[in-house]
Length: 270
Image 1 (spheres, rainbow, N blue to C red):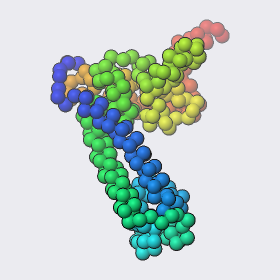
Image 2 (cartoon, rainbow, N blue to C red; image 1 turned 180 degrees about the vertical axis):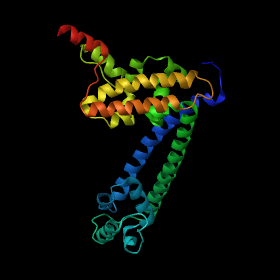
Image 3 (spheres, rainbow, N blue to C red; image 1 turned 180 degrees about the horizontal axis):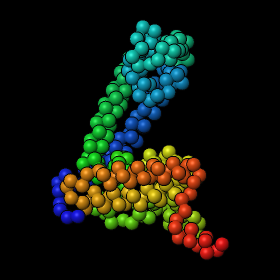
Image 4 (tube, rainbow, N blue to C red; image 1 turned 90 degrees about the vertical axis):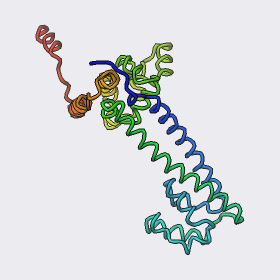
């Protein structure tokens, strides 16, 4: 492979985008919790019926003061049974009365949350596209978010490419690793890679095995992405993913593949 610098391979954008995405998630959670608490004084029963955060915010924005719930059409936001329940509870709610100014501020917060949600979706789309441009093989193996977090944690794509597979496997679990080494306990089997789809769909018994195999393939894929030519494509990522999926199937069925060396050793013993 030839080495050359390319502006398309600048991974700083990915590191910034994934950090911002995590910050946005935290902020969104805080805002939604605040909104539920705030509006809960006026209409506490709503959060029990509408559990989905995005639907809750949209419903609050549509209703405003709870007495409007009976006349408001919520069919586009909620399913029929939930809509009927909300309207029924709005009439007998135990919440306190609030002024127009209070509800104005609550609705303003709802507007902020909806804008942030839209921006988060747009940012995630941008991150996905950047990951496919910069590290296509790694993205195919571990997914865009996990890949971006690995790059961010290592500092750059090149730094990640220099790591051995064993380090990639426990990247993000350094605290647990050093604690285990200090106390002479078992070391962790996975770090950030745990959130990859392939590990998520494997059973608890073989999660450790899968994370080891996935880390090995991810380390190879990162090296191809970081140091390969422009047109390296995604063949390597797709091929490795297919191998891992078939291996996962074998392990799930309880089959273990004998390595030739152990076969010879077994024959010798017999």
